[in-house]
Length: 291
Image (tube, rainbow, N blue to C red; front, side, top):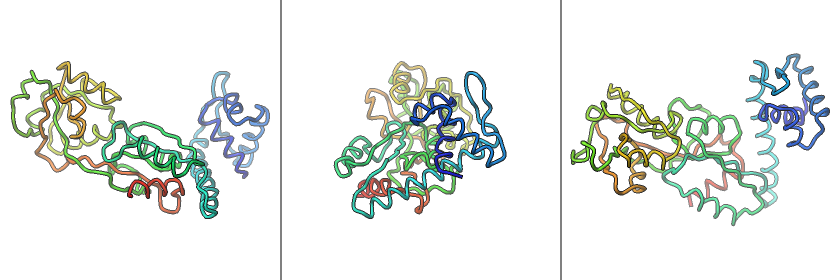
């Protein structure tokens, strides 16, 4: 099995199209098709279902994809490790982060990293913590700044960034605004909630807190960005439970602590693969972060 066959397979799986994958790889479409056929012959299984519009993975293809991504990530890490021993850090730093993550100023950190390591190409992806954890585990990301749960792969390592309590945000005219004290899940269970997609760290934390308290809640307004959430609360369309640092983005809103369970601490971390699979670029970024 040749590495180029795996590279071609992963590209087609990502693009779901032979022509687009061939253009990205800068190979002929006939050459790409021949490479995939050679891989299918070797594995004795079809890897794609081909239609006139797109290609999709077969069950065998899905089984191969994760392993192929890990192999290619390890090969890339090997090349970068040799370059690092020679005194020059090269290659790619593939980083993921949740929006408005606490404990790290991502833009400033990447700017400092680029000044120290100008030969490293930086790639950044913003997504929810669940997706980011999966991508680090699969080798598609070198590390991610995210929230970790027990459901995440036990193959991941984590470096703590910060920990903070969760806070209830509401409009100044909302009935809770005059509570003047910390609130328990029982106090707000019947309210209309604004919240993030279930893949996001704050949503995971809030869901865990209310489940632990045995309180059901209704998320009527679901968003995928911090400012969208704050806008909805600012219009008094619902309340939100968020990490404490987000209250500073909209000082006019009323912020009240959430109490009553042991699940209300929101810890953000840097997620990394096992030590032996961690790229030199990721190690250098963590060193810079710790310094």
